Amino acid sequence: MSTSSSPGSERDQERDHDHELPLHTPSVASLSLAAAIALIAWLAVAAQADITIGRMLARGLSVLEGLERMSSYLTNLTVFISAICFSCVATRARSPFARFFRQPTVVTAIVVYMVFVGIAYNVLLRYLWTPSGYRALVNECLHTVVPALAALYWVLFVPRFHLRARQCALWLVYPLCYLFVTLWRGSVSDFYPYPFINVSELGYAHALLNATLLVLGFVTLMGVFIAINQRRPDLNMPETGEQNDQTRAEP
Image (cartoon, rainbow, N blue to C red; front, side, top):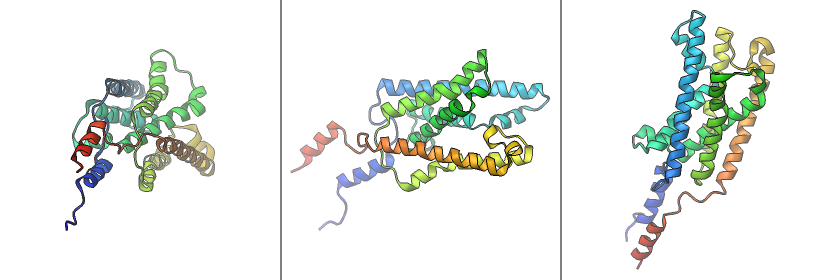
């Protein structure tokens, strides 16, 4: 009597661990949308870098200090990560690095980050300044266009996946690390990128309260995406051709 697992169960285990986007034969629409998101994100990041570095150079500071200032904003970091992720999806790259970014759980986490950035900006920050011309276009790409397109891609092309509690917890690493590093950098440089976590003006108690509310908002947004995921088609459902092959193989 054989004690080895059946080929079918082995295939199921492989599906559970090795899936990455786009699944099976990707549609032209899915690849085109992923490519559009990647292109817009890269152009927006490059344009924002040009604006920020130019402003810092005008103040007599260095390019490195300009990059440091740019990296202090959650929007810039998140759009940069989104550009990498959707580039991997659009090109169907096969390297371990690209396969990591093509996992549905990773794509979903990045989309949640991007949507959170869009909501936070449009609710809390939009009316604090009014850019015009070129800067307004870059600003909209960063805070509205990329988040909206990322959410659209997720709705249309990311099917249901199996999410473990540990993976949900890992989604919090990025925003919590950003918050910790931002508060630490602010304590050293006295620069805080967002007014609601400006310890110099609000004090630690008020700034940490605001930060806690933002984290709770992010967790709520995570919950919305997880709930929607549970109603999606199952990622582990085999293709029709595969089902027919299995049926023919049965005695």
